[in-house]
Image 1 (cartoon, rainbow, N blue to C red):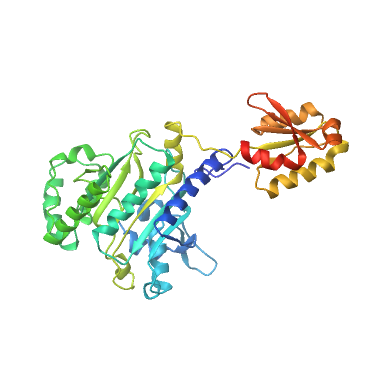
Image 2 (image 1 turned 180 degrees about the horizontal axis):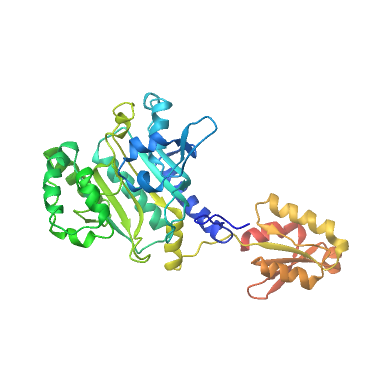
Length: 409
């Protein structure tokens, strides 16, 4: 049996690297005081249609939807924001008095053609800051994402920001945009979108080079002030960014701030993380008036970029316990347990194997140190430590071994 097209196994060392990306993200979330939220993998299809938008690619082409035994139309989550918004409403999180800043780490599903760093099942790490329309919250989530990427060690990215205004701004811009788009020779999909959702046309990857003549949106006074404040906050926080007046993002719920973290290292799929403000989404879903902002990044794309930049993730040094004779097996296993109880990463293969075979296993598993027990070591209550990277070895008293190992590790 093979895996389904668009799905894949993630095995070591890739699994370890993704876990490290998650770990670093969690450390930053802790510093910024964001709380974890775990949302269901399956939701009603209607949740994504109403929140994400009927004309978005996700809803029109990419959702995994199905009818269950109770005749309900369900969908595998294609993104995290709608589920978090629903959870916020269902659990009355707005009245608990604590901050409503959340992060999630989970697999998403889109029935699209597999592409670089984006399979049909993929992992997103994302945040939602719910309940404020302040530009300070926009700045916070952008700074937080920038902090995560810097801590991972990634350098080859550019932050692009834009404001697509409020509902009133876009209503006035709609006619100007349609008039200008009709002058261009566009792809078939864009032609369909001109009347239904003209702003979405600007997100087209095929025709994007044709939009340089399109006038940018005229922002109302409040939106101008919001965007100006955001830029000032990012500048004061030493966050490098550039404005892209044609940046709109591909989801209908965005208002005002939108942003993308882009790289030139991954070909046409250049966005490694993106997000924006969604002031009306929760209210439109029947919840309280809760302006919000958030982002999501693809863990697999971050991993690809790490590999492009030769970023390595350090594993704890592995100590491999080896016996010269199987009669010392119990003695060796007792030592192994002591190492693990002290927090030292340690392993063994089989004490019944030859010394040569056990050494080969140590090297195959990437061990840094071999801890060897033979007759001489058993009698003198010592252990021979061999540094497998240099070949150097020395004897240590068994009673002091853990203290010595903790020093050199």
